[in-house]
Image (cartoon, rainbow, N blue to C red; front, side, top):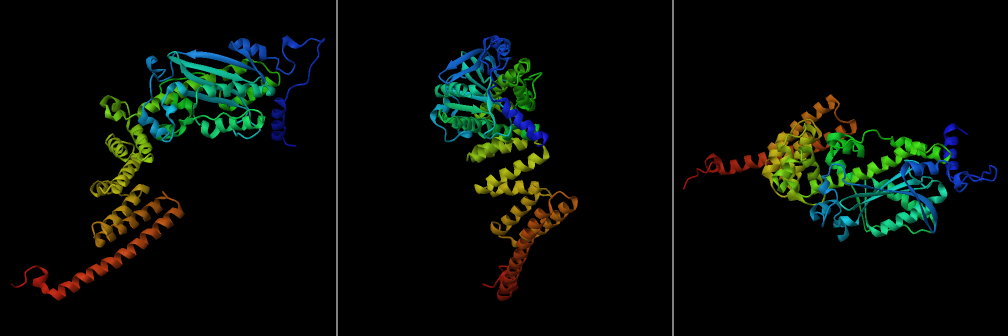
Length: 452
């Protein structure tokens, strides 16, 4: 058996309750024999307490924070209903509860692995909610595997109190993992949130072009203006926990709790920032100034996907006027031209296409769209054919520069050549018809100078 397999089995074994140890018939520090030796020390370091229910025990810790990163203290805990327009962009089919911030429950987990699956446990579950003008954070920790049922019951109780689940990548990882853990108990029914808001995808739309990475820590630093400082690396967290379960020291787990708390605080702050951007701030000149060009472009994309074409057009236009980076500028013009064409505004669409022409992906598409326009709307097949020829020349240039794959080049070339051949046939017929008409009418009649 190779070393990696040995390591995996060792990790699984670490979660099994240990055999009772008898040392002069005295149990260590009054704890149950299967609880790691460092558990009491960990509770002391954190100020945590043991929570008991019908399914056993687990460690619990609660802390209150006066503000979330990136939020003014007065705005840390939203009051009243949240902006309906912003929420429609996030979750158009969500029930009414989603507009009540008192129904929101932020969630983040620390797990024994990042791949998920039935062998992965959520050993630390952090939740948070707005309370008393700030953010209340509660963390459930299983000191060893037998405490999982107790932890899951406590989480289910909190989810029954606040029915809107709020996560960052939780739809893909945290919540499916927890649902699996509930099902595997065969005794505890998985909670059913009324709505689930996940802020990873809107964050990607808003900031990936600017930052590249949309890890929560990067967003906190560059969007919320909050630097965590020293923080444990996520990749190290599973091994830190396994070492603890095997009898290792408690001290390395303390930064893991702090990491989880910061994730929850960062998520709360980020959710507020995203809602403020989606809540039509462009209607207020001061609000519009707070949104940079890339954020405008990101909100435009979200609006377009949700069918809010009018707002999307306005924001695409403003983002272009705000000097986007070249590649993003082409993408914004392409999207705006597509919306203009859809609404029959061919004057704007043609202007945008003409400004995009070139050997880029968007530039080649602009050539095709112009050819379509001149063929079907302007009824000028000669001009459409000329545009198609220029497109083929730009395509060959892009191929020489190596800016596109061989498959993409071949597909685009075949499409353009097919279009050009049809246009040349159509242009030829049009020229022939014009010549025949002139020959029948004679030069004078064709010029409108026939005799009375």
